Structure formats: structure tokens, C-alpha cells
Length: 145
Image (cartoon, rainbow, N blue to C red):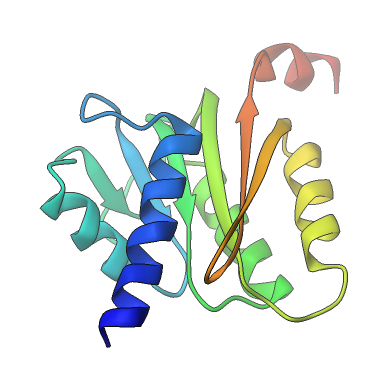
């Protein structure tokens, strides 16, 4: 149990670092382990965090999105679709990719880019790869589209 707990902590530390999450940011979490991630962030003093289940009204009010869990490509894409409406126009996002399916990382990168995110980093953890991206100037892209 302790080993998987330390792996989870490593993923959380990585996500916080990559998205530059501070206690002032509003963050939204999604994915298979979202409640676990939510509780872990609350224990660390991040009080402005919600899950897509607890935050009913998607108003693009969150600066950071975090997606975690044992996810297939379909599950990650579903979580991205769910979380995207909660994220602000200049949001940061971190996605844990721990799937063994081939090409999942590339497909997730492509999906994030289609959503207006620019990939910033990928960090390997014990539990998989944490991919981070930022959305900047999304309003211009929406107008141009």
C-alpha cells in the first residue's frame, strides 16, 4: 500500500509542479481517480479544487485541470471533453497517461492541440507519463475557426 501511495504522491507533485498550481488557483479534476486526487489536493491545502461531479456549472472558471486514473484512450478523451468546459481560456492542464495501449500519448497530444492547448512537458513517473499543456489566446482561435 505504501508503495502505491508514494507513486500517487509523485504524480500529484508532478501535476502541481507542471501546472504551477497554487492555493489561489481554481482547479478541476476528472478521470477514474478524480475523487482520490481531489481529497489529496484538499489535504495539501488546495481549497479551490472541485471535481466535474461536484462542480455543476461549467463556466470556464478554472485555471488548472488535472486528469488522473487508470485510463484507456477512450476514458482520457471522455475526461478531456468533460473537463474542457470548466477550463478558462488560458488554463493549464496535466493528464496522467498510464495506459499500455500503443499510441495513446500521441493521440492525447493531438486531442489537446485540437482543443487549443500547446504541449509544454511530459514527465515520466512511476505510474506513467504526466503530460502538461497550456491554452493561450484561445479566444482568437475560436473566432478564427
